[in-house]
Length: 344
Image 1 (spheres, rainbow, N blue to C red):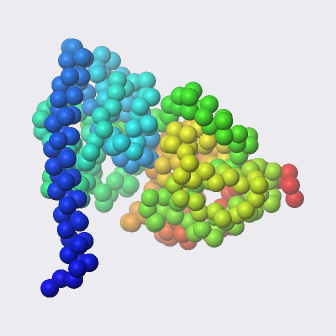
Image 2 (image 1 turned 30 degrees about the vertical axis):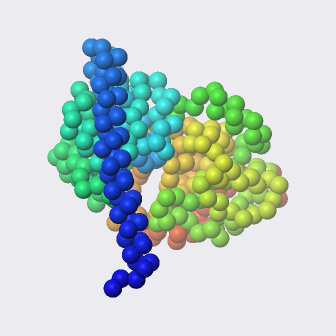
């Protein structure tokens, strides 16, 4: 007989599963009605969906898709289908008429089957399922070109790959972020020192991370060597250095506030993550730490200026995970980017 903790975990899983599935059908019905209302508001304009609901870096990298879709459909009513956590990444885009919040990939399957969109640009690779729902999301265009989770980084950067998955040409444009004036004023009110070094140390996947001891050593060296303050952004802090010129903003900023902090930085140093894509999109010089990710040894996530090598140093000890990237490589790259120190 199963133990009580096992039984409790089983029933908790069943509760979350069935409440999620019931909620999915409810939100699908509401969104179906909302889309029909939006279509009436749009009149004769074609109703067009761009679908890329997650992850943060993917959405930022694929921003040029909105501009390309607007170019192709100048009179279209264009919305971006996105998860709630990433709404701000598309909310202010001048080429979008709106956005639709996705509950889960299965809900998206039902919306597509309902035929509510006149044109769909689906940037997702097939078979990224909801953990509770039985539906298996499929993107026939991605399947037709043989794009899978096992080979996607062998095919090019995120924009280059996902634009083709949507049936568009392989796009190569520089990504942009649209930061409203209200956000800029909010960040200005933080009174951060000018020209800070901004670091981001922890991603959503441990395979992308660099050791905490190295980050602490790097921050201590930066503060001892340069007169630049250092600011850490992200969800969870990694750096434990105590110094009046070090500022921990982890967990305190919205996505767009984080992008604005990075935009104002003298230099961004980080692992492959959403904030690294922000740095590329807002024009900040960067040092990006890469390493082997699954079977991907030599890969390039970024399009635009980072891919062209403009204002960027990308470090990759090929064949080794990011955790094994030598500390000296990062320190040397920072030295090269920051130049002759003012403090010795």
